[in-house]
Image (tube, rainbow, N blue to C red; front, side):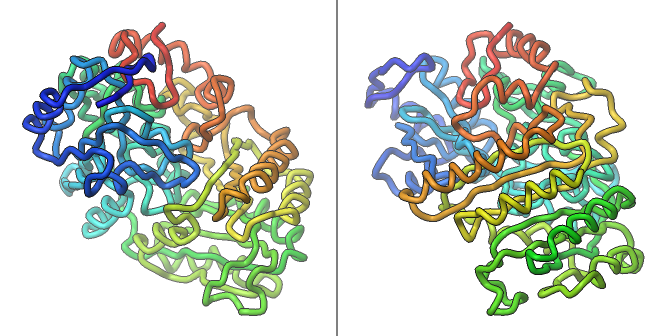
Length: 471
């Protein structure tokens, strides 16, 4: 069997060695053509179409350790898949041994310590489902089909970020299989340098098999949802967003967006396909207080649709799932912002009027609060001056539409990036973005990350992600 080494050379893996790997694992080993291979090797973004030579579907940490040891002994390129949701498709690589952890989805909740332990294949919805049974929540993202491991290793933000910081700021420990196939515990009390590097610096220091998250009292009922207006009202709606966001209590997270109206049942049919502006809100405190606080949004102007209501927090976490299904083609650009100004809003309106696909959006996501109060070097996630995320998620169906949609995303980004802090979110970087953009995401943390890499992976075994080479 032809495979690739970490340096990209082609090597032959004998049948005997392959059978040895099968015998070592509890989970299945899939080759091209085998049942389960296509499901495993396929990732969320259909623009990424790579074919690992072997897919090992791990069922536990012992399987992960065996795979790392096997890759090391045979000098094989190794790629690691958790939820497979990354925009750049970092979970997969041609000719590699793919370590697929998507079957490892156990969640254990310690209600006394208020900590959840999640295996690395968990999706956000897995964690939310278990923690909400106890009226608790971890600080995670805002699409329930996202993998927790990739989210956390890249920083992570969502509706609870304003209260408690980046997802990575709320991790208390990780189980990690190192490049020499040892299982170690990374926390503030042990292997602190590795723990620091994994909280936003990406996963190229080892394979994280489990994560412990702090939990907070949230839900089970919150106030959340979306209100939409005609695009003609965008100047006034975006000004409302700016003023409300500047004075919002930490329990309230506000998101502004412009897109073509989807064929959703809560929007009138005669508006489907027309440009709209929307404000999404999530109030994670007491619902009766939330209803008062979001009242100015619900009463503003003449909305064409309103689904901002009391709802279960877990439902809020999946509210946007339908906008990002697996199998579409995705190309994004993003920047961090320190504030919203009228010129930025004008640019957003101008570019929204040029949208090429009914699935593309321009989004302003509020994140200011807890993350701004920590030191810049608290974790590699950094960007402690960020108060909003500006995201331009291009999304479409057909390969022949790639050029027009990518050009729209890039044009919009070029028009808007002058308002950036200079920082960007590493999890939103696309496959074609290089070291300069990695530097924009990680900033001054890069040198320290290189030192962590040198200690834990001096031979650069883990290299298929946003690779930080040893110092």
